[in-house]
Image 1: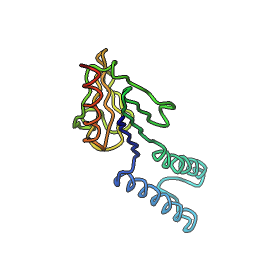
Image 2 (image 1 turned 90 degrees about the vertical axis):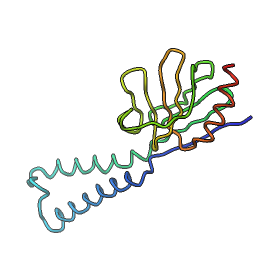
Image 3 (image 1 turned 90 degrees about the horizontal axis):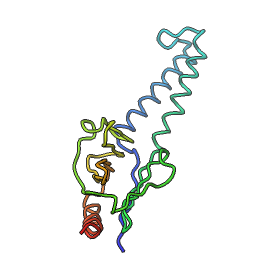
Image 4 (image 1 turned 45 degrees about the horizontal axis):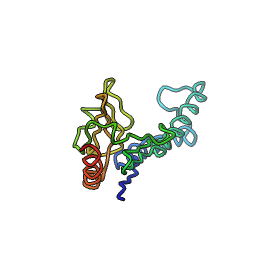
Length: 168
C-alpha cells in the first residue's frame, strides 16, 4: 500500500519579511512614543488608548498566520485534506466521487486571487499555501477543487496509481 502525505505551512520569505517589518515599525513607534515622548503621526495624547488597542490587535494577529496548516493525504480510499484552523476535521473525497484528477500548474493570483482558502464564487475553489502546483479535482457534479502541493512528482505517481485503477 502506498500513501502520499504532505504538510504545508505559510513559511515564504516575503511573508516573514512583511511580519518583521510590521513588528519593527511597531517597536520604532513605541520607542518614539514612550522614550522620546513624540506622538505617532496625527495621534494626540487623547487617542493613546486607541493606539494601544490597535497595536495589540496587530501584535495578536501576526502569529495567526503560523497557525494555518494544509495537510494532504492520498491513499486507496481517496484524497483527504485538512486546512487548520478552518477545517476542524479531515475532509475526504473518494475516488468514486471524482470525474477527473490530475496535477497541474496554475496562477494563484489570476485564478484564485492569492493563497489560502479561496473560493471563486462559482464551482471552483482552492486551498493553497505556497507555490503554483496543485492537485486539480473535478467532482461528478462539476465542482472543482484545487489542493496545492509542493510534491508534484509524488502526487502524480500516487494519483495515477489509484485514480486510474478506480476509474477503469
